[in-house]
Image 1 (cartoon, rainbow, N blue to C red):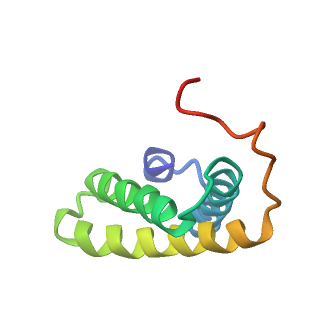
Image 2 (image 1 turned 120 degrees about the vertical axis):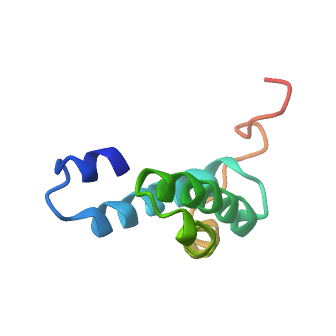
Length: 97
């Protein structure tokens, strides 16, 4: 996404695309993780926030962007965890798979 935005492939709608990406990630986290949705979403946003500024040469802003991204992704995941219907125990992935 960062490279696509840099070369102009996103058409100036990066903010909307990031929200869509966040919602898709949150739904996947809610479906695949049994609990602690906020923590998992926070970690996804935190790691994504650390990688994204490096592409933008924003090293000084990386901690702030990572924290904000982590909180936003965490909140999206928490809300999705409340909304998305959980699968049965048989459908959940086990660490052995």
